[in-house]
Amino acid sequence: MPTYVTFFTYTADAWARMVDDPPNRAEAAAEAIAGAGGELIAFYWMLGNDDGFAVYEMPDEIAAAGLAAAVARTGRLERSRTFQVLDMDAGRRAVERARELARAYRPPGAPADWCAEYDRLG
Image (cartoon, rainbow, N blue to C red):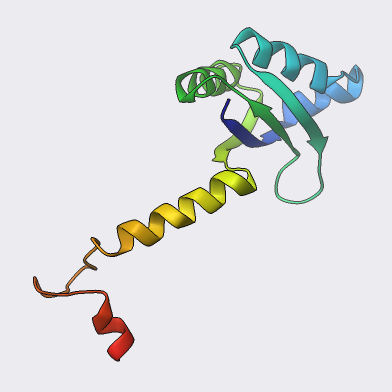
């Protein structure tokens, strides 16, 4: 299954509710993710620009987008950003594919007869 990472920041109201009654947000996240057919891998609070992040697997991008929309509709997040991530094997395969595709790519503004060797010539 594809792996996703979501960084999130709670609203002030959500923080007030959590301080008054400290929850286990990892359990809530795991339940929501499982409901969409996925599995929570990790859930962390963090210091910095975001309040935390979750790493999870989902069956596909439709399930991931549905989960993001369901969480967003609660209004308890100030913002969230979700990324699909690749493990090292998939990343290596992507770079190998890029090597193949680079021959066919013509950069913006390049002449119609441009070829990759031009860049190496200087």
